[in-house]
Length: 235
Image (cartoon, rainbow, N blue to C red; front, side, top):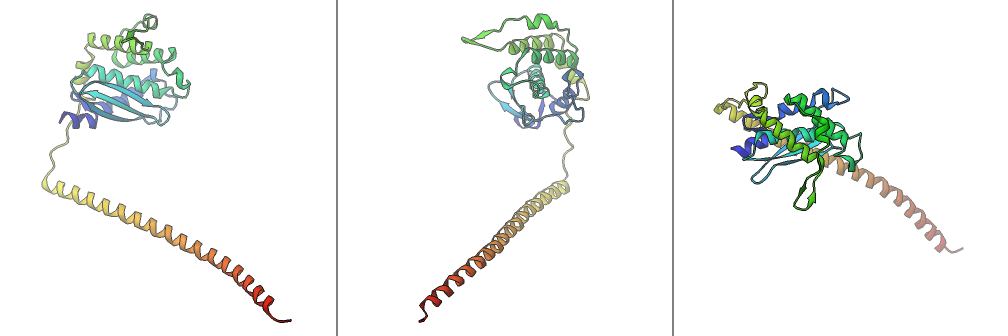
């Protein structure tokens, strides 16, 4: 059940899709057009680790939720990917974790979760080295933000806020189940019927075009046939 809830965007009793929309409207997110819908999010359940990825040009994010992980980690990952989407027009691809990105991430975390974060101190942090590879400074800042969220009890505050609590739908009656299945079957039939109509129109158009082209070449063949017959007549 946990995996199914995660795919729906629910983790630790929190509706992440509602929270996503809330984070997108932060003043620090600096979304130029406030009418712009939040990025589309896909949540994946993982048995091993968490993480995220932003497809900024298509405005889609993928959040990999570690099923035994913490709510704080998921919240910070979600915020991180949203910040990517909020300023994708401002930076080239190789500057996606620039200083401006880090500043916006810190400002958003401060506004969203009520954290007391020192921007200058966080920006001065050295990039850590993990397994011989230099990680981006933004990831070090991510960890510091998570530590501050844990110390401030952010997870408990979010879970206790009715705005973000997941309310499961009431159990369906037998009549509702039957109606849903009938509607699903009807939608599938209509989809197949629409495809059949589209294919019929496509091939009827091809037939019409073929007839026109055949008529064109028929005229040309008749012309050359008449010339051949005329050439064979005795003078």
